[in-house]
Image 1 (tube, helix red, strand yellow):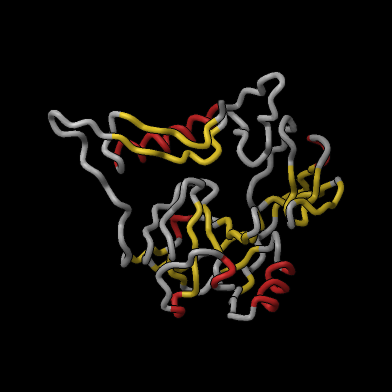
Image 2 (cartoon, rainbow, N blue to C red):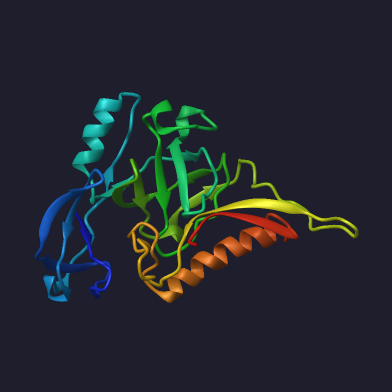
Length: 239
């Protein structure tokens, strides 16, 4: 079960701890979650071994997949070998499909019900479209209409190169002026400005460190992938 901790509530837990949670169960954007109201709502009782992951195998039957995924929300699952049908996006998510599907690209989830995503909460996975992955294990989460595996430890995932790397552009040559557009995908700072609805949980950073990581990743992409263009038009940034 996914436990949601509102901004401003400090809860300190670690993987492997056994806890008692007091709160209210609710549905939010399709996800069943447990909303806690304060730091004392999560009580650490001790430690426990992680449960064995459930082997999740999706099929071309969308209804069966929906029932299977809903039943395992928040549970630790394991995917079979999968292939990346897209590179790591701006949120650190990697779209995946069963490696036996022999599909290189999926435009939308409805096009193939086997589509799922993976993310590394403690890191930033570098995956190119066409790579194959083995050892994807972690809790199953639902967000923005898609299921995502929050990988326990990305260092244990085996990534076999086989895809196409992201495009890389050369810096400006002498006498050239380069321009680019860059969608930074809801880049907000951690300041709650008066009179503005700028604290939506999906993009409001929880700390200055998190905000700096968001900025650093986008700056790195501009420098290493776009070749430090002279002019950059930014989309989806707080104003």
